[in-house]
Length: 163
Image (tube, rainbow, N blue to C red; front, side, top):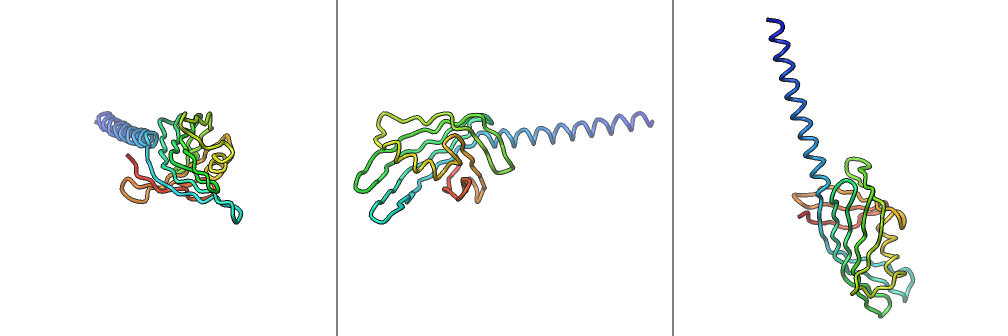
């Protein structure tokens, strides 16, 4: 009789452990199929008389734990010059830093053939959203159903809708 009770307890505990493990795995998998998009306006003007604005759509994608990318498309206005921004920031060696923060190495910034923004202008935007030219640290906080607040290391960057 004691053996049957022990066997039943072992089966119940094993089943519970399997359920908890599968829920944990499913949650982690959902973290890394993250895709969201937003439109933002950045005012990076530093001195009076020298304006610098970016009007861009941003599409953030964590493909899996180790790869992802950030698409930035739109226009930049520097002084009186308007240029096209169309770049993809390729991300590698991702890791989850804490429950809401992800860190990636920037492997490459790919410039589309229709991008007319000079690198020195684009790099000012990149400096606003990254830790350094080689690292991207992104915080993701859910604020509503499919709506997320995306933050960089120093400030909130944009809100986006997950799709």
